[in-house]
Length: 311
Image 1 (cartoon, helix red, strand yellow):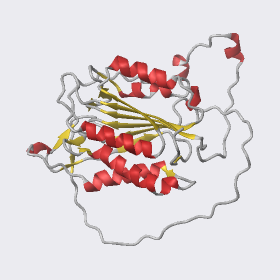
Image 2: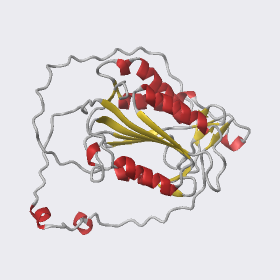
Image 3: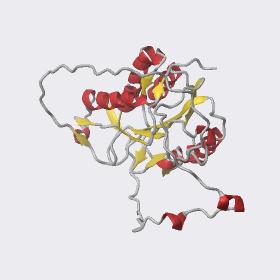
Image 4: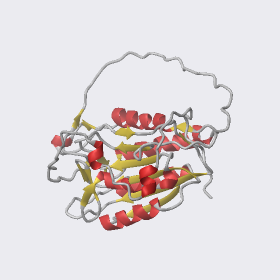
């Protein structure tokens, strides 16, 4: 049976300013050195993230019992499968169940303070109830951006210029994704290939200036303002699809030296959920509905996931 991870939360009163005056909100320099410091922005020819000795840390925040909400039956399946899929790529996986917001806040700050300099990336998977712009801890809802704020470039220096990946299984609103049918004819597609040029010369030590929100990717289980479905026996559509795609990649391309391009994997997850899943429930209002995952990316380079032995 399919359920949603919806939880109703009061509408937000958003106050939007008419002017984007950057100087109005800029932090005041705290020293004379700050006043004299000149930041230089320059182009780069690097188009692929550096491969490091370790894959990185992956956190799983799993929520079954949320105060005032329906129990998320079947989420243990998601937690366990997600852990195994991440382990398959060599992540150092740390899974937590039913943490309060204060516990989550402390955990994220602690992990952000660790040294990630030898890691390819950082990953965080959240499975919970949600609403528009919010996700639930055990005791309360909180703005979704609280998940990644501790890992932004101005807060977590050892993850600067490294991908920070966030996977969120939760409803984002009350709308239902209806099915749209179409007919197509079978066609074959030629595989495009390109020759790789000579290896690039070793990089020279150069200082770059990039936005603090650079190199981040947030993958949502559903479109903004829509339901997210979870099967009480088999787990959620999004997490299960993500696991299957990662597992195949880890057993094939992920073991090759060049690895598997992340955005290609995420597009495969989108395709799998969009084409293969449809709700089947006795609740007529929720029956025969669809789901459309989507991701927001500020990645500045191509990221390849590679299977690495955890040390």
